[in-house]
Length: 177
Image (tube, rainbow, N blue to C red; front, side, top):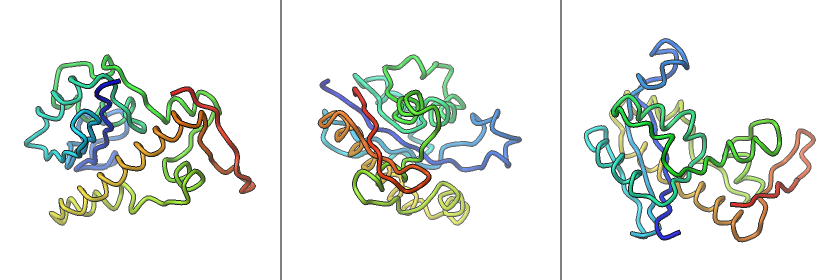
């Protein structure tokens, strides 16, 4: 693949503020972040740059993210008539959920695979948005993109990633990314 684009975004509003999870497209993007393997760099997008973000996703040979089919793309559907689910996409959450028959968090996967933790959570990013702290959101979102990229690259190189079961035992999940 010549241009894998890793992607994540944070929102302006919570599900509760827009009338529930069936209105994700009303949440509004606060910050979006991509990492392009073709460019070898991260890009940060504000809401004013959302059209550029969508164009960058369309140019990707593969878009990789975590829960992007059900969440991130749905947020972006509030800005475009395009069906972004038609883009060549690897949603790591969906891929792993299909194998395990239950959902795992990105934090649980990177903790077991690398011993790393996320720096914050989405609810904190919502609070930062209300406080006008876009730089903190951008840093958090960049780190999530980095973790997603690390997890994907590790899975591609080793054919598996790790998680811990409810008893705390470290288990391997085979992947064919």
